Image (cartoon, rainbow, N blue to C red; front, side):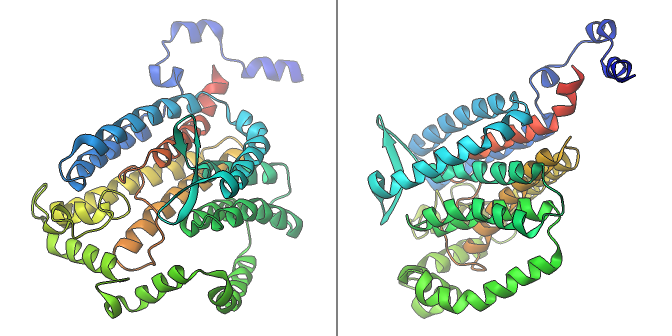
Length: 381
């Protein structure tokens, strides 16, 4: 009986041979997601050219990174989700070992030690943990009873906390928060109860004062104080936010025109090609351009959520949902800090800000999403 059921599920060889397989099905590509990512990356290069003052150096390097990232996405899409589940413990251990290496032999820049340099190639190991952590938490919860028990919750939180603590030492609070959040998202999607969530928020509120006194560095406290009162030091700690707000506000509804922004082109806006690039877009393209960019992000996030709902198993649902929600947090935190709603934590705008390791990691994540989204087709071949 079981053998007959199995044979019944197998596709008819004659019909499958007679029906041509599309290129997207053959290569496990989610076409709507791919089109949205191409549009977003193209928009990013256009904005980056203006944010770089009309110089091709950053644009050329970013285009190369994006080319590598799209190839990586295509490769990641070919790997069955079950393989990711099996590899996740090894990826996690290697990632944590690289984070420990950063503390001893890492390369420093701008007061932070976050990079490793091997053979002339510099990369940021913490970026890889943005995939390894949700993957490991999803694999950990895959064969456990859901909603998760207290033991499962403690284990999942430990998986997320270890790399987050290591990254805080670099220091890179923004990335640490994103990585910890990716693990928490997997827990939430696994059915974490609201009583647990409320208890965690209450514990965080109680711990806020000790964290302020002993857990934050002086410049991190200054960023929070600047958020609460940005006008206190406009020429110092509040300069970035003051200039970004001025750029966004001066753009109005339709903007000043491409490469016509005064705040960015006259170098009033710091980090215009990285963390504050959306202020450049808003000044030159106005609210209309900013809303179109946000629409792109919303469509990508919606597609990721759809893939999560359609996943074949618990691991796929948890991983796809975690990657999508982490991408949302990326966007939310960057726009929040540029508009003065959140402290400045150094989180780039996904696939628009300049940065090679970030682009490659993000696109690898979307490749994993495609692998999960096309798993049903893979099984049917």
